Length: 230
Ligand SMILES: Nc1nc2c(ncn2[C@@H]2O[C@H](COP(=O)(O)OP(=O)(O)OP(=O)(O)O)[C@@H](O)[C@H]2O)c(=O)[nH]1
Image 1 (tube, rainbow, N blue to C red):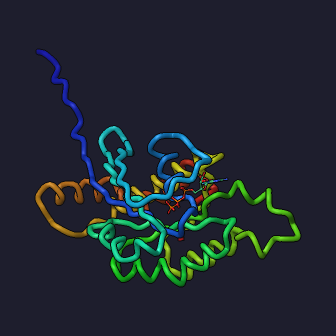
Image 2 (image 1 turned 135 degrees about the vertical axis):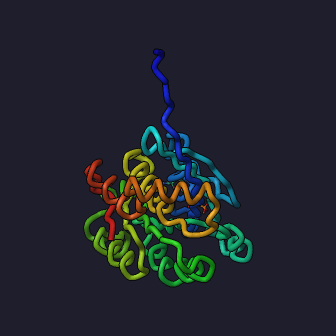
């Protein structure tokens, strides 16, 4: 009798991640580092851009991400909200070398995000950590955001995760945060109970792929020091 060669059923979950934050804080560089694996010193302001990438969580579970890159420019304040439609998770970025960009997380970004995405999880990302050692000690406090200040802001805005990255020097830090975002958003889907989505949800439950649980497991497995799940 011949052996049946059964392919395992592969579940693919779709997830939309929206990335916002001040101009020049490092959003596009983070996405480029994750999707294309490269980094450019050249600053090209973004209008809107969409990238796609598939995260292979396991042999039988994939997350197909669409990552929406937005402009931090005030000129886009009226059109940027269109990007939030159907978002599963929002990543708010600031630059650790620019305290004003972190202040704007509280005074501008979380307010805009909550207006359009009242329930979706938010991840706060401090970008450009490689600039920290370049800033002279006596200027600390005025020109740099330290880790504790970033973490405090993340708690203040009710973020699910606080993470710090350098798109310039650390592929790993960027992969960690995007993959935690993917896992958190995939386990968080609650809308549109189509039969296929019901199957996905039951699969997620069976495999204990709850968003936050999966994110924590991922963090432990990878021993990532750059992400903190709150
Ligand atoms: N040193 C350093 N520079 C970075 C890093 N990430 C981005 N940059 C630089 O910062 C500048 C702006 O980066 P972008 O990624 O384009 O910033 P953005 O947030 O997408 O900007 P907008 O499109 O205007 O909203 C570029 O010159 C990048 O090379 C980083 O991790 N370290």
